[in-house]
Image (cartoon, rainbow, N blue to C red; front, side, top):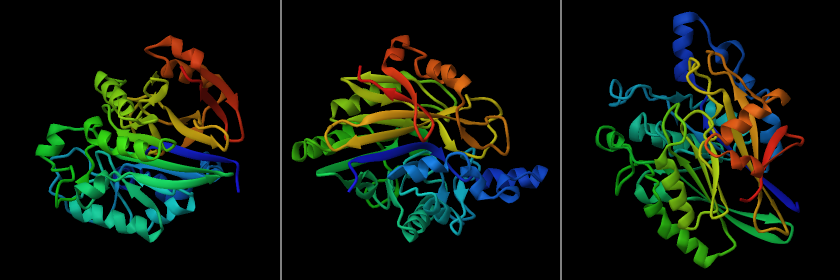
Length: 350
């Protein structure tokens, strides 16, 4: 029985078949065809294999559906091959995925149900979406043994509110309607408070898709994140903008506004920072709070065949400045070090 536990969170993830098929058709360029799916993991698989539990934001549906009423309404529709994607997720030890994002309902009910079945076929857990509002709102619930300690671990997933996604795309789950969980502090607070009342030593993570594509932190993210902490959450880990956003603390709880991309083989044409994060929570038998580590990674942002790698020594200051962009005092709470995974920042409580 291990005396420590590493749970790792990864940002925006897709195998990118919809992008790579387009590049292949237009320019005969496809990282999936030319190098294979495994190549996407070459430089980061040791983190996946070295973590006890891995959770990604799966920003796609796993479906072979060809038609969607959103075609022509929504700029991009994401899909991953149901014959390949779940097996690759399993192979690289991705044990759970959040479907709560702005691509989790691209091929609507059929695509969501097929995604769920594909994930179940490889025993991969999902959260953040469901066949109705109740299922979509359910958190991922895990019980871990750390030495003699039992840790009850909860992760809430979902997407912020957007009027167009509600009105035009009918994206959100409702009573007797499948879709994405609308994750707001006022909706989650009752559930979180109940968890904390019944189990004060539980650990609650908000893994939320918010912010705006290719943009830095906005006031809405800060307001939402603080609302989640006020409701009882222990940490907020965000994703969505496809780039690092700043970090902060509220009531001594870490607010990681955006991890950015993890594996996302699409050409961003240099419009976002190539630096991203993996967040690892390391729990021990003796301490209630985990050590929070941020492993910066680099993903090419101006390539049709991008790969993700750990940062190099001469890139540390770049990432540090991005994390402290709005508040330079945060630097005092970032301790840089190395371990078997690579270079990381340890968050020291503010």
